[in-house]
Length: 309
Image 1 (cartoon, rainbow, N blue to C red):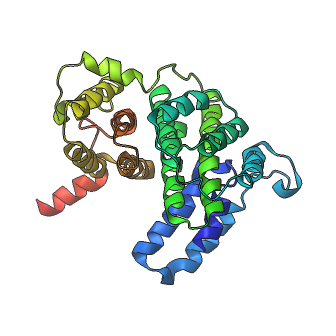
Image 2 (cartoon, helix red, strand yellow):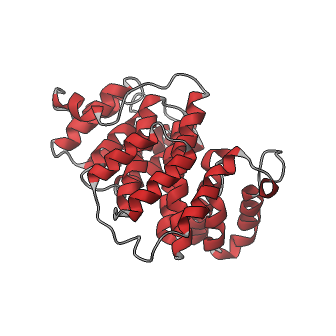
């Protein structure tokens, strides 16, 4: 069941990634609550995967949200059996990150396919995809960039969970295509800053040595400062566990929306999915959308404290 639905979850960009998110998180939820509840979840999921926004039948039409998967289906047949045994190459990740800033979704598929076929391990592709999603958070903090992170999290989970090589390749290539789709959606919503995620490295060199409390005091009100401080803190050997534990506690205290929980759980998980040499950049960029210590407590916290008063 997962194999089948993962295939369709990454098929098109409609609903800004929620199809892939629903597949991954529906499966994770059923793993927690039990598969005796599967029927209503999977019926709803299947219905969602069929959504095409009132357009003509996609299978009989040439529609923009379906363009990249047609290219993916073409190139998948060109892969040999050893595509998942290449070398991890951080320079290749940086090069793909550069390409994804201006690529079309179709070009992203082709360039990613060429990279893997040249002997680069898929981990280096995912590194570039996560860093791209983090960079978008810095360029336009908001709902679209947030979903670039949560969608990449969902597809990476599906990639790790699926067994068929074709399914896994399609997930990888479509995740690459979704990055330009998200960039196009951001451009339609307003200004996209020219900042790059690698800028955090140089900016953090001149930053005073921060503490976790200082970082989360800035989160939410001085996003750039919090991001630079996080990079300096992690680069100086600060504990990522302390940082993540504080972020998780603040989500429970301050979170007022499903996206607060969905985003924070995705980026905290994906900190460990990114290669160690690059993961500090990703978590530093994520602070742009995490709750901060100065945010207002949610209403539930007040009720809990009253109950214990």
